[in-house]
Amino acid sequence: MILKDIIQRYDVSKPKQCIHLYNYLLSNISKAHTLQSAFQYLKNGGFSTSRDAVRRYIHWAQDSWLLFMVPIYSNSLKEQERNYKKIYAIDWALANRNSLIWDGSYSRALENMVFVHLYQRWHRVHYYLTRKKRQELDFIAVDSHGHPVTALQVCIDITQGDTLKRELGAIVTTAKYFGIKENLIVTYNQEKDFHEQGVSVKAIPAWKWMLSPA
Image (tube, rainbow, N blue to C red; front, side):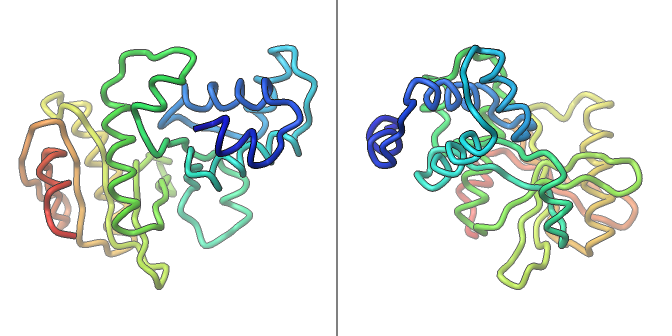
């Protein structure tokens, strides 16, 4: 896919460098990414490159539906550019096969699958950082008018008290701030309803959520 859709399509002059970058990005699914970190990775690997070249490689990956670079939710383009982006792949199996190393994190695999499904529903998907405590919300989906409609966290296991507190904290704060009604924690196989500070949050297994009507 990389060779056919990107290397040949764009007549990439340094294919080894380009593929090395993609393998690095595919190894960091669901993690924070900046242009500088990608540029520095190639430099540290002994590649002669530029930030503009790295920017082009990433743009081609997105244009070819290999990767998604998910920005923070903000009405300010400057803030979107200033903050890191999160990396997701169109196909988790492809990412796993082409990554340099896999840490065995099934939570990252689940998060990637949830992102792809959410993107298919809404097309505009961001992550969000709450304003005071800078708690990270995995996903916030936005409708065609730019209004946040879904706040969503991904959590394999919600039985751990500290984990649940963290996940609920970010989602409740975000839901209250934007007035979001659909608030979800997508889990591996657990289901439960929560009511916190006037906000309803539903924990739902991934399979059940993905099979539910949009």
